[in-house]
Image (cartoon, rainbow, N blue to C red; front, side):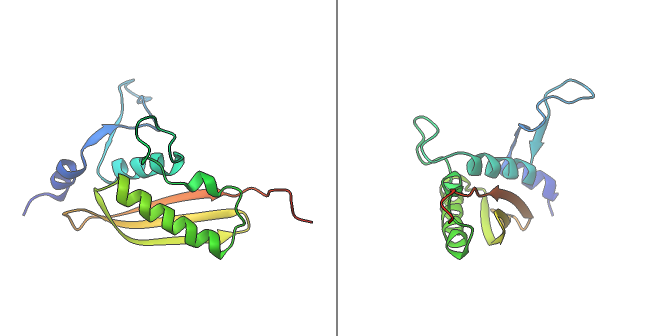
Length: 138
């Protein structure tokens, strides 16, 4: 049986870690791979508005458009729809198992449980959105 880390590296690849570009110890460019790589990709997708990337209109999730929506059940359904669609279009390396969305006051917590395509390796991605009040509450 092959080592899962080798399978993970071959399927997912590795690339520059965008959160900590340079290692504080060696000064070299840090890389990430496997589920860390996928989580970084999901973070970029969710933080990008639809149409924000020139020449690539499908990149993005529409999550930013939800900032001024009331934090209720409708918001949860819309977010799940936008998130599933964005993942299907932009992240073929994973199969989404479950999306859990919790709304607490103006904070929306998103947890995505997924499996790397072609493996049985599971990953989890957590994302937090804080909605804003419009100021039209009387």
